[in-house]
Image (cartoon, rainbow, N blue to C red; front, top):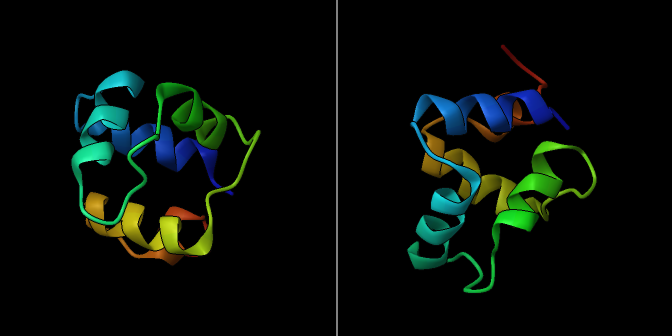
Amino acid sequence: MSKNRLAQLRNEKGLSMVQLSLILRKTDGFSKTIGSATVSNWENGMREPKIETWEKLAKFYGVTPAYLVGWED
C-alpha cells in the first residue's frame, strides 16, 4: 500500500483526517462509520482498505486505483 499517496492526496485537497472522514461518511458508498482513526490506519499502513474502498477512494481523488496503491506513477 502506498501510505504516502493517501496522505499526499489528502493534503493536496487541504483536508485533515477528521475532515476527510466526515466527507467520506457523506459520500455515497462509503461506510457511515469511517472515522479519523480509520484514515490514519490506512495512511500509516496499519490497515488496508477493502478493494471496493480502494476503488471509491481512487474515484474520490480522481486517480486510478493502481496509482493510489503505488502500482503506477
